Image (cartoon, rainbow, N blue to C red; front, side, top):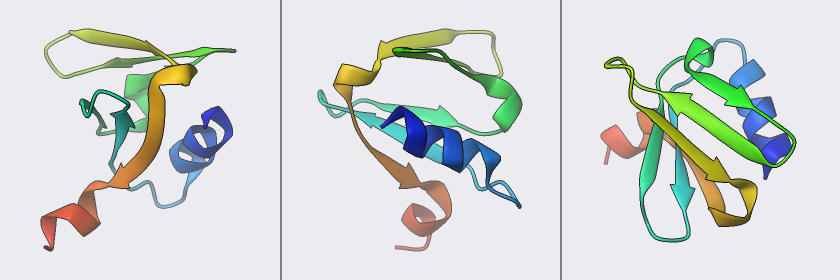
Length: 71
């Protein structure tokens, strides 16, 4: 999953996405500058400075925001 997230962050042009967790919680990634990808965890900071840190074990998929908004 971490490799998929790295690819999504490097995508040109960048497309905002969510990281979906096993609980159903969605972590928005609005810009590549908002995310740090470690060896086993990801940290995402929102515009207010709140940081979500989660383990790769809890990540289930990437959801593209553009596709979700068009539904």
